[in-house]
Length: 557
Image (cartoon, rainbow, N blue to C red; front, side, top):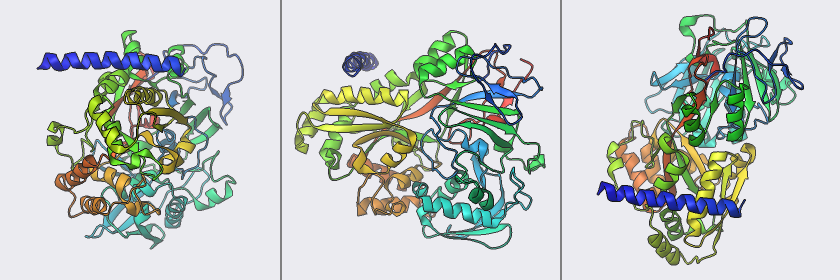
């Protein structure tokens, strides 16, 4: 039986690669210690006048002329703004947890929220009211004293943007300062994991500094972070330098993610994987997130890697807009049956991904028995054609596959395009920049299928984000669906007293029965470094992005 399965897999992958080649034809952790070479062109300079990074292809050094240390990482997104309340768009915030601070941040190693600006909190028995105390000696880089009024301002501003609705923020009924350093936050409904998300996603800044900035801190953040942004070139690079007046001087109270173990942090915006690889090989960057093919190739050349895991799932989000073919249940099932997830994962991610069921595997409300179930929409072209016929949509039906600009997701989209062509569906592949895509993902009329991912500490928080109509002013789910039966199941799974693997399973079974989304994989990401890297430990916040100030280094290398 095993040989039979392996044989089928090899044939499927071979077919997949052949199809992808055809479609392509049609559609066309530290730098090796080097002396800084003579630079061609202009380099990015910091406020202190010390050159820290060169243009692409120019080697850097980890020890500056003045003796300070520096590290250079990569942002996969072309960061256009440092606006603090932009929301949790995929891949677009690798700078955020370094340039800003939050009330708390969830530490997966400790399994709990870790204090940053907040000191502690108390919660009512029904989980609807939170009393939060902040430290009374928090100051930003401009000397502004952070008080409870600033916390209220930031929460209200974030709420008004609408960018944090899928975190459960729409359920925030009120927030008020109850003292100079105490805040009361009240929710209309308890959503499992919502409090934790709000605590670690919404930066706390001075209202005075924000209003005086002139551009809502889009280019020059003033924050309480141990680092200050000293140079920002939109879409190109960010430089952050360690402050010598950071407010938290008690090491016993220092948050893991507020450490400042390096003096200068540079982030280069490099969207294309091939260019990240070149930057790593040339010594322009110290560490880079790469795709499977590049990571495996570079490891064979002697490079090392950090493999980053975090609680998330990558999935296919299917529009329920009335004008989309995906509003039809049989059409959704046809598409899911047309996709060979095993072949896709092997071709794109290899050893760095595992085929997923709809849930967060490390969460308390996940049942390992789910892994033994047979997914009803596994790869079956004939079954896919039967569903397509039942849907009333024939060959030549056109759909739009939309994704955030990224080489890996582009590859996935092209593979999907090839698979769907086998059953007569003509898919247009559309790549969008992060800011545009963030709006598209929330607007079902703007896509038919999108390749995306959700992060959460609970499986039910994922269900809440995707399916809970309480999060959206439209009165529908994120994908435009109105289903009272699903809503009732989600509310039970997300409630404090009834959240469990069993109630989460009720949601999962319902979603699966009606093919409302398509789970793809749980993904780990390789961050590749030279063998002699000064980075000895890569520390990431629980969303999977490195926090370079908190990493460990050996500056003697």
